[in-house]
Image (cartoon, rainbow, N blue to C red):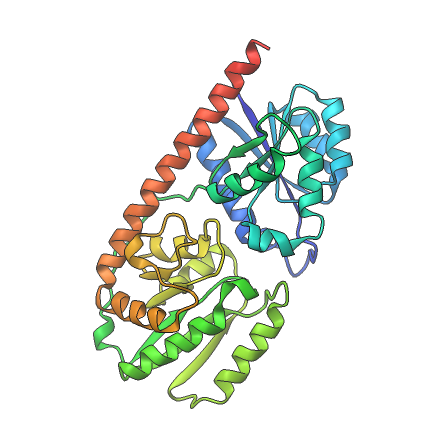
Length: 355
């Protein structure tokens, strides 16, 4: 039977006082936690371990004795993977990536160098949670090694507690529109805020625009400053910006329930847990085609503000249908995820028995 060890690096800005309860509550941790629990529900042994640095991994291996070690995101230097693989040659090593190429290309200057070094190591593979990334990296890596060393292992999201849509937006004077998540340039937050302003102007509604304000990444602070300055120049009685600090997951889900329309019309995504959080709580969502599970009727063009405004209007007038369609699409996606992970782990384990 396969035994899967997920290893994740503890956040760089960890503070044992400030982060006592929310230290692990980030999108990357949540996405791994969901897969971990899904594997357990399928009677596949799994452990999720948080590492301070590269040197923690060996201790977890000794205690858990995994058949597979999945390193989540790009943080273990290739030299360390090479050493560990020589110590445990029978373990399948997977470096699992969570970023599409546009974000991958600016997230770290070592991204392409490290992936090339990983695949040269025996029994080490690149895992991806996005099929487009699979195809793009395969072009690159197949020019380095002859064997296929990329594995498609998509995200999972729990779908056993969907909430029904229960609002009447037509009767509301103000509309609560969110664009949650870490603020990064590729999140396209400013464009979505402007589209929200225009939508509310056309519909004689007050706008309450919700964001997370304390995770600005990859020059996101510039985006955040421009967002603040834009709302400071607007009538606060008509257009209000609400900045939410990063919360524990349960607290964030309670905030999601107060939102009328969730926006995630990003330039690049691979899954987008924020959208899934909103949809699962009965909140209509408008995103971009970058979100792989989103229903096609709930998509806007991130570079066409008029299209975003029109699509917000469509969501506004078809909110219950939006929620139902997106929940159906998310359920279909996650069912396929279960199948993919089970088939890979079961086949991989059976194969190893005959090696």
